[in-house]
Image (cartoon, rainbow over all chains, first blue to last red; front, top):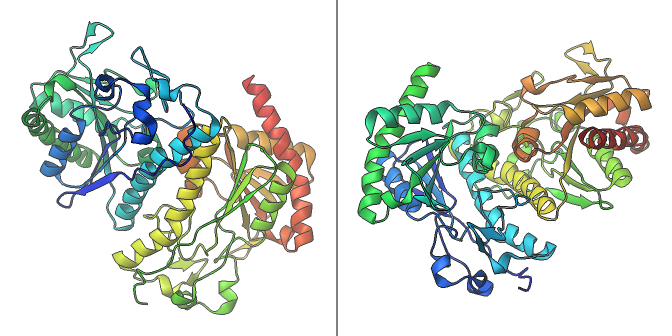
Amino acid sequence: MTATPDLPPFEPLVEAGAPSPFLFVCEHASNYIPPCLQGLGLPDELQRAHIAWDPGALGVARGLLARLGGRLVSATVSRLVHDCNRPPDAPGAMVETSEGHPVPGNLGLDAAARAARVRAAYLPFHARVSEEIALMLAGGLAPIMVTVHSFTPVWFGAPRTVELGVIHDDDARLAQAILAEARARTGLAAALNEPYSAADGVTHMLRRHALPHGLPNAMLEVRNDLIATPAAEAAMADQIAPALDAALADLRAGAA
Amino acid sequence: MTATPDLPPFEPLVEAGAPSPFLFVCEHASNYIPPCLQGLGLPDELQRAHIAWDPGALGVARGLLARLGGRLVSATVSRLVHDCNRPPDAPGAMVETSEGHPVPGNLGLDAAARAARVRAAYLPFHARVSEEIALMLAGGLAPIMVTVHSFTPVWFGAPRTVELGVIHDDDARLAQAILAEARARTGLAAALNEPYSAADGVTHMLRRHALPHGLPNAMLEVRNDLIATPAAEAAMADQIAPALDAALADLRAGAA
């Protein structure tokens, strides 16, 4: 695969809800691979699969935005181009193999091709998240960062029983509050730091943007068989939104 | 003072030295206040004083770049417009009073004026630092972040005996190595976390950019009476550069 230093920038999509401190982030919202990358050499079926994006995550994130207000920043390009939830030096940033499938278009990328991916996908996304946070802070509002992901019900043949994962990095405050409220208010099988944890390198967004400003933050992972239709996405948002709202109230009560 | 939502962006200056992992940052390199802000209502003398910038810091940073290589990102606008080493919600971001002097042009800024400052000064600087780091990481080079500042020899009437301060945030590795090498190799009165420390909110740059990527990092503070001329700046760089070089070697030896 030739280097593509002229890859165009993929500005994230920003949507606004009613005024509220929630800043939702959906790094894996899109499976779009620009034509110049020729599908990264993958068959169509894999370009539509979990390795390219988090199916259902954007629908759930939009559902949370509609119910809780705030802002939502979502990616407009596949994580296979550059995963915006991985730093550029991580093996997962431009994966050569994902869930056992080689990604031909990502094999042996040279420095110019890697830099082009960073400029096209990673930098615009993070610049926009930075901007949203800085402007909310300047306006006197401390954002509550919640990133929204989905995971597959089966992983290398093993079924996963968790339905909602709540993941944290060094600051566990919000994640623990969400877990407690999800267990109290929903019928979901909820677990802390499942099916991944910070040790798997999945909390880059939280580390880069929430921790430096001391913002309450958490990563949500929803099992994707539960959000396979627009109606299911909305039903999931109906369950999770009250738990997030209550978790934020708990956090504020604890801090008061 | 009226709001100035049309303030132009102040792109930082980026200078490159010989290939090396050092990423020098000089947030307080400039005392430039754009004409539309009418000097923020300050007399000329205060627009040239320490409250507006860190005199000598850019000269020392350039001296280090010339001796150690790497990259240098420096501000092109006064910290009085927006301090790039403070988050937008910090009282020090757009100071109303500095070292006992009121800053008339910063009094009672409304939300639009604050947002304009963030967009003009804070965001372009941080976006560029992010970009430098991301591209170095994508190229296989982990940056060593060293921010360069200067401080006044007298603070509210009290003389300061420290000549070189080395300041850290949560990751003290590089700062401790620099301190040890500065004491061993220079005649400077060097101290850790003097004249300020992270508790004073001065490590925003390190927290926002070095810690999330696990990059070795430190903030240098040089007493400004020792760097009052170009020759003095060069002499200071002559002293500090070998200490930085040795500190980096110590870090690598320790990690090996």
